Structure formats: structure tokens, C-alpha cells
Image (spheres, rainbow, N blue to C red):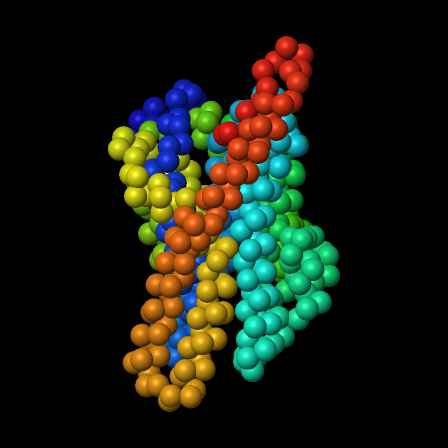
Length: 383
């Protein structure tokens, strides 16, 4: 293949809604739902079909964290580095994007547990709903060594860890933009390998097995890797055909190695290539359906555990009292998955979007009311 397949010409396709990255976000959010629901059927999928259904959480969380760093770098990197978006405004924008939905979901679980208890129904695993674990989760501080935060809406640990990444983003950005693309790529890859080796040496396990109470340590190297991939993508043009074939090959290799075992580092390399390829392939005809599916992906992520707890709390009572056959139990399991998708779409349309519209209007008003600094126009928080 010609060397021109990779060049330093700075004409990387811009990120567009309804493109390949949006499609990946929805696919990963869907697989996260499958991963969380796989153990709720008559036979866990990890036992009845393949262990990949259990360890899929490792792969999907890695993708989620790398993709977050990649997308934020591509979308906000230039405006934060150029001072058009302050570090405080960037953090506030990202924090308010995740906080309202998180609080609604956790408080919904509180109502569900208290209401169910008043009606005589107790959770099958009460240890996951201990009240001393609630404060750290409500405040999204559970990924920083703060006691508590286990159970309840357990996947929110990654949101907690990302808040730390949001705080670190502007400072990491300042260092990355001073380096060339290949140096940044080597730094992103080498940094993850170094942290992984340190946890092995000091703790006896890889960084991806960090306890959730220290999830920030797990998340930050992956987030920085995503930022490095984005900076590389913005400086080095990868021919779309090469990117497409590389993405397909990486996806096939990822599926192949998972059939045998986790293969953490190989899997991480494949995920990185898939994300890099998705950002390098142009989208001549963006899909409105893909765009809509992608914007719902956050609601899918934040709400699916709550739906699972509520749905199978009722389903398990019905199964026990009515002695439902296995076929009906599987039908209930499938309906529960469909309910998770349906609830996420309704939550996005009826609750999350109106709240975010109000927050966006408030941020705009806050920005307009700020006096001009050094003759520069007021920063717009719309990125």
C-alpha cells in the first residue's frame, strides 16, 4: 500500500452526528444493556452460551472511557486550548450533562426500595441497597476512594471516574498540544502500559481490575489514551479505505480473541483501532436515525440498571408465585431488555432533553452576562 495512505496532511474528516462514531456509541450502549441483563434469565448467558457475556463489561467499559476521551478531545480540544472555553466552563458543561439524570435514577431506586418495603417486598440482594453506600453514590464521589458507593445504580462508578477526567482534561490538553502526533500517540499507549505495569507490581493485578472505589485510577489512563488517539487523528491523515479495512479487521480480531479469553492488551489495541478508524472514515450521508440512537445512548447507560432491578423484581415474584415455565421466563427476560430500550428513549425525550435544554439556556445566559475580557467576545458554551 502506498505510503500516502498515512500522511501528515491535516484534513481529517470532522466529527459529524449520525456517523460511524455515533453508530458505535449506540451499539456499545446496547451491548451494555445485554451485559447487565445476561445474568437475569433462567440461565445466565455466560454459563449457557459463552463467558464473553460476563467479561463483556470489561470490554465495553474500556470502549466507553477511551471513546469519551477521543470525542471530547475532537469536540472541545481546540476551544479549550485556544481559551475560547474556560476550564471552569468546560467542567460545568460536562458535570451538568450527567448529574441530573444520575440523581433522578438513584432517587428512583430509593423510592422503589422504600415503596417495595412498605408493600412487603424486599430485594433479593439487600446487601446491594445498604443506606451507608448511598451518600458516595449520590455525590458521584465513589471512584475516588471515598467510602461507600457500592450497589444501587452500580454502573455510575464510571460516571464518577469521568468527572475526575473532566477536571484533568484541560491540564492534560496543555501538555499534549505541545507535542507532535506520533509522540502523543506513544505517550498515550506507553502511559497506559506503564500504569498497568505499576498496578501489577504494587497491587498484584492489572489496572482494569482496580476496585470500583478507585475507579478514577482505572479510567484516567484510558481517557488519556482516547485524547491521544484524537490528537493523532487530527494531525495525521489516514486514508479512508485504510481506516475502513483496519476497523473491520480490528473488530474481527476482537471477536476472535474473545472466543478464547479476555486478552486484555490485544482487546485494548483493537478497541483503539476501531475508534480511530471510525473517526477517520468520512460520513457523506449522516443518518438522522443513527444520530437519534446515539444521543439516547447516555440515557440507556444511566437507566438500564434501574429498569433491570424494577423489572426483574416484579418478574421474579411472578415466577415464584405462579411457577411459570422456562419458556415464559425467557419471554419475560426478553421483554425486560425491550423495556430497558423503551424506557431509555422515553426518559431521553420526556425528562433528560427538557432538563438539558433548560441547562443549556442557563449556560448561554450565564455566558452572555459575563463581561468581555481583554477585548475577546464572550465564550459560547455550545460546543
